[in-house]
Image (tube, rainbow, N blue to C red; front, side):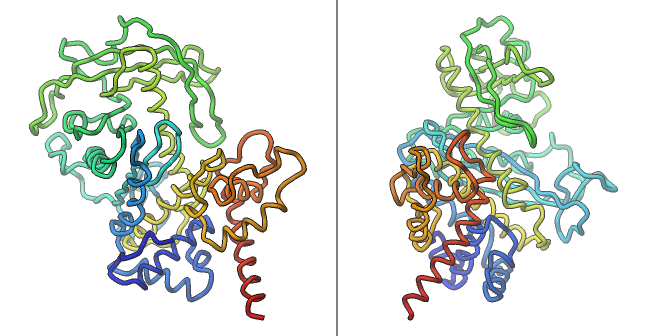
Length: 455
């Protein structure tokens, strides 16, 4: 992998980080002893993570620059979100409070936060790569009243910063649509968005409108444009994806500047479109899907409103990436590294590796991108040797993808993970397990080839 060429001011240091990143992907693990392979690799990884020259910012610059190239000429959803990484029961060692999900003296646990932006092909629903990420820990002192602080001094400024970064890095894309959940419902984001960026935000606040009414009541008198079926991603462990039949309403609203917010040059009023999707017959025991979406995209017809809803659903790819970062894959909350500099360096590699693994899962559906996006030349050679042995007698048990493509190698990985070529496509856990087996077999294949060559 050449993502790190020219980084960190030293080619040996760059090579060490590159090996560490490759090991994380190959092993689907953040255990340094495991990804380092041997004692020398383990020590090299520890030195790289501890080096003052290796920073999350420098690492992320290396791992995001290819995304802009992949996005050129495409409609892109820049999906952004924040996740907490918590370490309950540990000494903080410089980490501030990250959440209140675990019991403790103050109801808080030490940890840090990651705000990531993912580039998703809006038409193909394919993850193209990581656009940016910010990693930080909170200070423990009580902050001043948020209404008395400028946006630049608030954590919420990350939503606008991410939109600005997306505009810069997706300058060659056909369209850039920045999508965020309810936490990104910020007046300043609407008023200060870059001109080249379209916004799509799920409303969280029942804002005051220019006519004196409230946002959530605006749709009551609007006619139903039509209906649509929305695929609802799993809400958490033990739940499955389902389909929801929704009715669609859409129109234009004029938001008023929040009464108690600081005025930093934002206009008194903003005209924006509102799309409402409400589920008509939810499953028993489940709350109905209800999305109120504020957007700068067209939303006058049934087709346009349905497209806005579809694009918002693509935001689940960033949630899928965070699950791969945590319990469904890399298990970042189980790492033993506690010192913030080392931990943040590891987190930068981990979030990019989670995206790479998701791309591998995507490839199972027929991506023509090269296998070299995720695999080395020796691994691809091992894949050629494995493929014939993994194919079955029926047509469905044959690898019909172009040899050397990402889809081709993903089929091999899925088979090694236990997929039988029938029923539903292989999921992230199957792909993870298959990748672990594949890398182990590929390593043995390479060693055997080298031994045969040296005889």
